[in-house]
Length: 415
Image (cartoon, helix red, strand yellow):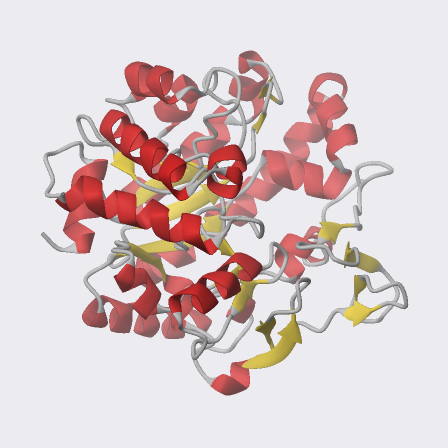
């Protein structure tokens, strides 16, 4: 069975030769650049560069040889861009490790050791990272003081938000001439050169874009106190997302296996909203996104949502979501046993294979092994499981534990 067949078999809940594995196919299933640099040193692979492909979260793009070493079954199509040395420039990570940034990213170091990112004209501060920090924080919220009377400048304002301004590949090339033609050519080349499943990260955030534009505190109040403006904004966002999906499906919808949406709907203690609020504002729009993909492509729908979202999952599944990530099993009502029992036949869990906070960063290699084996035994029953950590591997995770994790996966899969 090829890697692609293994992933598609898991999604279809059919018997497989092994549990499929992910590392780095999305910016919520990857590895911190610091953790990756430490891993390369431990593996004696310092000949490989540390490419920080997601500069906001400071995530590394793992080399194909590392993915093969760990038996990874899926890759992000974004890795088919920025493939030349001249696409990168040297930088130094917070722990002193050498790495490479995309050439378009040049944060300004401050006297106190922090880094600032400014708008093109140098006026607005868009993002910053404190001295010793390991990711950038958003500082610019264009609608924090109120909604605009019209949305003629929405595209420009969205372009100033750090998640868009400093977006990872392939979208850092979206303004290039013939981008869509190049995307298809690159994905065709990937399909010809690897048997791994292909993932495209496509955003289409709704709730999160409300928080990016209005700021979290304001938008949460708006859901209850200003529903008309919330609906107006979401309609504008949906229009833009559907336009993007039209282009994605036309360009690579027959080649890519999974399309990843994002919308962090949960906190550790529960969802950001009650079920009725989700059903009013977001479910109908999530349904439109999913229906478009399923009507115009072969791609499976995947959503990244942190936190406790089990109370929203029946409606997300009904809206057309097939795959859930990162499966934050330390959040309320997100225990793996509960999730598998309640939803295991109706969706695929992409993550939850080991706790990032606690086990992976502070446990011994043997404790990592034990949890990985336990989770894989539980979550793989009946299919519907792709092994991945609970969100990205963080900077403080020892390389010994990363290796122990993948060794345990191999032990479970192949004895």
